[in-house]
Amino acid sequence: MSLTRWLWTLLVALVAVLQVWERANRVTPPPRAPEPTLLFESLDEPRLVEDKGNDGDSFKIAHAGGEHVFRLHFVDCPEKRDYALVNGRLKDQAAYFGGISVARTVRVGQAAKAFTEKLLREGRFKVQTRWREVYDSGRYYAMVFFEDGEELSEKLVRAGLARIHTAGSSLPDGRGEFDFEGHLRTLEHEARKAKRGAWGEIK
Image 1 (tube, helix red, strand yellow):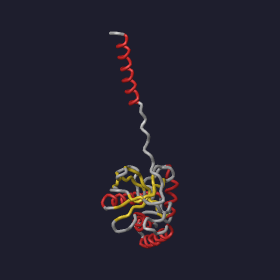
Image 2 (cartoon, rainbow, N blue to C red; image 1 turned 90 degrees about the horizontal axis):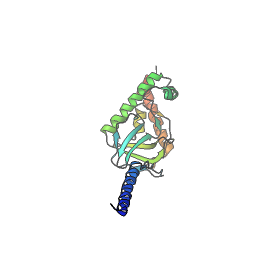
Image 3 (cartoon, one colour; image 1 turned 180 degrees about the vertical axis):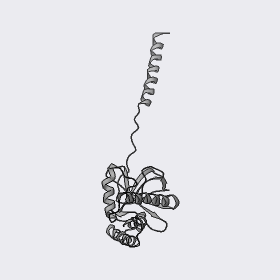
């Protein structure tokens, strides 16, 4: 083999090795987070994704734009289990519901999870979000509306499965944040009077 041919063969081999190395070490950039917006975006074809992090007020949704975890505006459901990091939060939740025990509060949280998942599995709904992130957690605040016109926070409060305790928002139909919160307070009063959900745990 001539020196020139040998050098060309070596060069081709080096280029091939470099291409293999580049493919093996290529870093795929993480997906870009959605940009916050003042206007609500209605997600196409939303459906619940089974996920261990799902609970009464936070859940993973698949839609035409991918998969995201959403957190409801206005309401906070009790934790679904008790562990060190959430114990203080559970005590606050228990106090809100009239000083019930932590164990009873956890049961309410588990009921809230089942309630929300049933609605999202069996009913048709739409998710509307402004892509406002929840404390850099990778979750986004959203509202979930059903065919009957009600939002998920209304259903949870009416059932006594959530406290009114998190960031609010004006609504996509133009209703104001404080007007809607006042409406939720009325539903909460009715749930407490009827002893629904957590309100029925008060002894």
